[in-house]
Length: 623
Image (cartoon, rainbow, N blue to C red; front, side, top):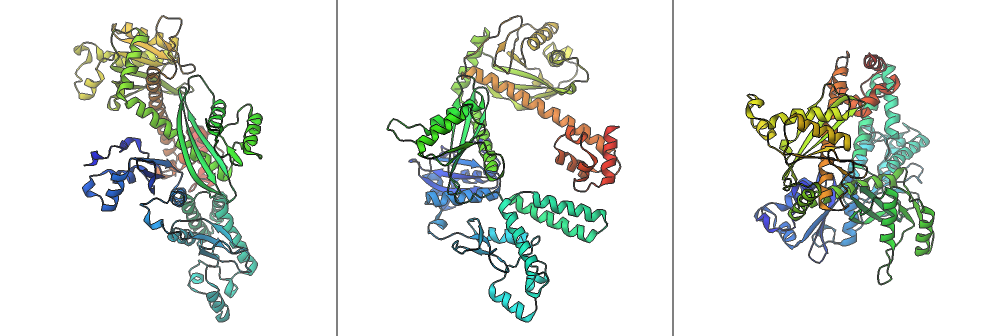
């Protein structure tokens, strides 16, 4: 029954990131807006057997003709975007939002003598700083409950506060440490106001500065053997980190901007456009452009802006906001800014966001663009007609007698000549066969050509007579012995000649070999001083590029894994370092190289690593 939903996306195409999804009917009307911590897990629930769905859900999916999603950075950002789109589109299946009720905000009354934190649906009170809106009040309460452990601001009503003052007795929140109790003068009015400002400052910035300050105080208290204070500060650090995991920036109400995220490779570019009006994301557009000519990122930005803001055949142009935020400024950005300003009738600020809220949203837009590009490549490769055209095009370009139904691609990866590894990826009928991928580790090699030769000699021995293969009759060896029609190496003329030499030395003459160089996407054949140039945006070049990129990804993954294992083994030999601390070190510094050059002070900043142990780590790594 699930097959009746013709618009169902493939499970592998749906990302596992947090995000917001929309169901559309055949006319393009939004039927439903929802959010998810894991888009793949959530959307899969809609595409089970129709008989197993709730009646209302079944009516919605059968009325829908398409589903689209947008990736966001966190659950809180998904919450914000869901709210925006429900208010914008008023979807018929979001019945709980059909009424025009107001939505809850977190508020801090900084204008009061004794500020308080509270939830409100009224934004017209002076002297109050607001954060939100939220779609559900429980989300605000959960945030307040966690933050009060770190910033114990008064949250009681005026009546409760007055009774506490008159009776000189704190309420329950004061007794359990979630209020500094200015009512009974445990802290002065000025001290309490400072706590309230810190609360609002954390909510405004949402950055890690507060966490870093608390963590520094925690380490200092620990070194001074004030363990009770250090434990309390540790709990406060954990509380703030939990809030940061759930929250993200919310623009102020005056922000009007179009923000572009772009991901590109040699053949195509994906654009994700976030339309921000009144501080909220009002819409998202996305599209993919085939690059007929080589264009760098700044040229793509200019091309995108011209197409988005130029007038159509009827003289109608898209609305131009006060700010246009791009990943990179074009060379003629001054002229482009002037053009946009003239179209708008007032000044337009064209710039690259560097920090804060807009930079965070720029990263989200870039994430969506990368996903769109990946999805475009996957769907294009999955198209049977495109695959057939690609294989036929490769056959003609390389002068093969038959289309290459099985293709193997090889790439070598190393770090300054150390930890040399190689990868082999397999495509059959234009699709990856991941169960037949292979990884190689090379003990010693002189350069990339020698590495290619060694790897292919090890692989080609499985194509000889069965007695040469020895007694290995496993299924893995059997798959490894399938003969390819085409061998591809990542590189130019030297790498291709090394691969051809391996074929000759193995006595194999019926396999075509070529190389694809990354800079200009040239295809090299052995013994030919000039490369084969395939037309850009063709299916055959697209398939060769995907093979090369997949081999590169597979090799890099293995190489990083070996580096991590190597330094992990070295760290585990240092007294006082267990698995948890080793993982914490690698996670904190991000790479073995960065950890090796870190100072004692930098290593000591990692949770659970003191100055004495940090010095032992530095000495151990140097040895």
